[in-house]
Length: 542
Image (cartoon, rainbow, N blue to C red):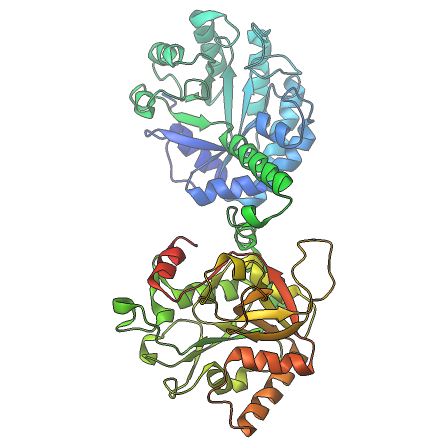
């Protein structure tokens, strides 16, 4: 076995060397750009395989050195910037002779790429799984490439893996062993033995005869059915999962594109793909937000008022806590709502408590109490939080869940008062189960190019479902001007003696009679939790 010491890693170079030299079996997962590198790290892998095939394919090119080594280097730089993991790059043949390998190695070291794997074929290369008996490099010439790479590395822990293609090209076991020994003697830190058989017989035979003269790396793309423990018992050092992130991405993109093409709609796709918030998380938007708070002048952001005074009637679930605090897969309903608001940049969140108010505790929120919740309605609860209605304000029921994109659409829609309205709800839900049915000046058109504003005319639970144009989901945004109108309307209701009993549909209908109240139509992907069936649906919603 390689006699270099096994030390605790302090750099990415040392981390890769320790993975290769570790007495345990190690794994490298394929990535082909910065985002996939982040996903590999997030998953828990300890190292990355930067695949030549998948980097080329992600650029729309063949795995035949159609992408220049400098283009590949650009991709590798993004990958190195995106992750703290060590990267072993598929360097193909080294992109030429010994001189190309020297320059490649120096540039990889400059960018923090921890190692390179070069194969004993001719430049330009052809993918190993294409054709038969591909020509191999002369042993002495390839050993020169290895020596040139090792002499040019600027970090002592940089790893050079020599990939033996003799079995792929049909030259037999003896030739594979002869080449591996020569490459090891030339200074290779590890040997990658490659096979395209559907079983691991060749690989295991090679491993037995190799006798751990230096670490052995394999790529079981073709012989994937072999149990991993077999490789562990054979003394394999490292397994490379070589191309499965790109292959799975292609499968998912094909299905998503097909669905959107056939449906001419996003409604069936939106709930099946990750939210935009997940992309923001992966690319580090939170760090940028922190940096903006440090380096930029303060700027106003939206605040939110969550109406959560209701006890609810869900049997044992609401015996000792209000509905907003019931558990939805390890988090309270309120916590999930607050997470959605926070994910959109809303940090100043006030929750109006009422029934069993002491149970409504959550980090990062303010609380306002409606101690008359049993005898008052939603508008009174909103009035209790009147001091929060200042500047851009979101008002939301405390028992609803909705996809992130719905909140994003409401925040981005023009208008001083914007309501999220489900255009399909009156037809999709049984009569009598709607909370806030809407009549507007125009129905939902379904035309994504139609940006003509839609205005609220009236809202009530008593509107016949056959004439309703949608159901308000309990989410509204008020601009600074809209918030001023809202405060004035609350004052009028108080002066008229209606503030204690009025509901939000009445309040919004009165506002619509004086000011433009804009409808932002959606089609599903939200849920109000009123029944035990709704609770079950909520647990499958996230």
